View 1 (spheres, rainbow, N blue to C red):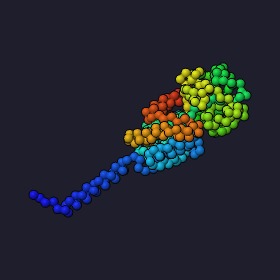
View 2: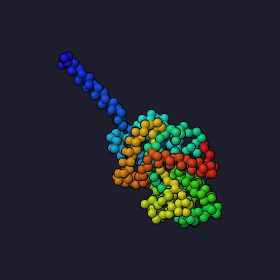
View 3: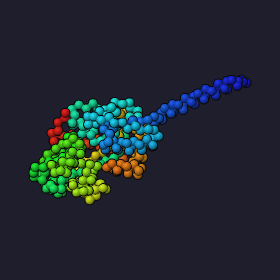
View 4: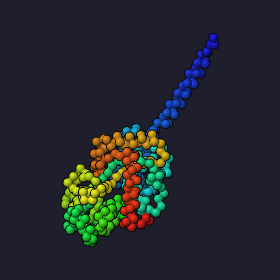
Length: 326
């Protein structure tokens, strides 16, 4: 019978320990996430995009057990930061916080450096905010029905928006198209100047998000005519929706997260699960409501469908409104 020496046993134990250690290291490397995650916001700090990203980023950081670092990379209507992520390694450690701009920018820019459907993959929808149609209380427009009637009669009428190519602009052009009517778009450089001029009576109509107009509505300096979401938001339950007059009309500001295409599905699933848990947290929902948004999780498939549907809608709107890419 062959005798096994103590030295051989020790070598065997040592070898097993090395393999066990290596296995543990490999598992640690494979576990996602095992280092900080970057969330790129392709807009300047301080706006709604930035606020939503930081609220959700802080929450999913706690869920995933790794820091989520929010980084602003503004420029070109969100294209610079979005392109940065589209070209980043597809490992789940670089996300981009997107908004409606990803579905309207293809019709505003002649050559985008990325394709939102080919170069990026959805993680999930985060939040929405209703678009509101408002009027100066001294104007002749006192209701949505009255606005539609004046538009159909082709009476001289104009509206203010935060700028050409914004979701506000595209939404109003969609309404004009659906009504078969006319209204003149007056773009401003941001929501502030647009609100100021409508409050001051320089223009009669405004398209805005609640965040920019809540105080003016509360004090009677703006009249709220309608919301553009399909159903009445809880905070505007007494205000009619455009869809009550124009069937199937549904436009809102929405936010979501995306990663580079070819990111492994298990990593996308981990991120999506974290977002879902975050948006089930009452404290997170409260914080989002505080900055004018309703936390509303939509999975990757829902976000993919929304992007595809809206790309088709806004292509048609851009063509009818003769919006020429620059």
